[in-house]
Length: 252
Ligand code: IPE
Ligand code: IPE
Ligand code: MG
Image 1 (cartoon, rainbow, N blue to C red):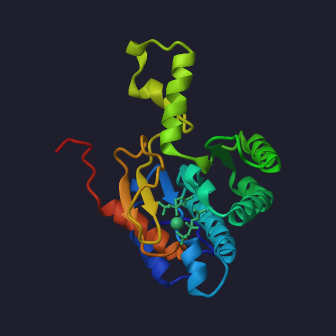
Image 2 (cartoon, rainbow, N blue to C red; image 1 turned 180 degrees about the horizontal axis):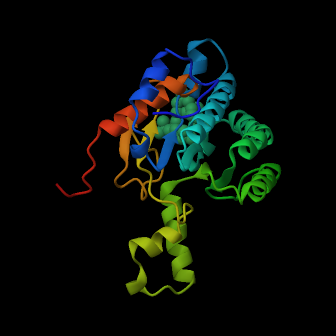
């Protein structure tokens, strides 16, 4: 596959070989990632969990850039789940502050690759400063059409389905009108096509409440790397794995 990966892929490297083996016409239209393993990455190095999150944020930046260069139209990143509020307040605060700082720094990347950023999740409960920053960034990037990055923050799949049902009832949607297409419009992901490829890092093999409705036919790839180590090689390996699968959607 011929794409401009200059600066990201060295000639003659393993990554260059993997890239060569990919078929540009069969890349997923929507990749969703459960970015797991920051804490373990840090504790294995005798560092604090926060260091793991910091390193994880760098990886997220690299993966966004790589997907933009590969012309993957939609990337959805599981950043903070509705269940992550169970963590110690110190870790939550640090994560929220980090998210804020990263949004500031990411503006440049969004402009350079014409990426639209969208927050999916429940906007309540987030620090006001972070909510404002998210709105501002969404506003700034709303007309960029090369790629969409969905940041799932305070996101839970069950909560998403329940709020969709509530909105439909409140708006008096006729029961007979509730089709898959209509229902999806009430989900946070709106008009986005379903994820084709769902990756979870760190070797865990569960969805943890991520895109549970939308992932009905996603190809699942469980990568052994902890998220901070999920660099270009592992991404390209996951895409290669995706291209080796035969998708049948119930047919033969
Ligand atoms: C994922 O890494 C990041 C978030 C959930 C915010 P973890 O923090 O879950 O890392 P582990 O799973 O404890 O290693
Ligand atoms: C899922 O990871 C949430 C994110 C990556 C944001 P968790 O680490 O929270 O999931 P569990 O608790 O292992 O299922
Ligand atoms: Mg985890």
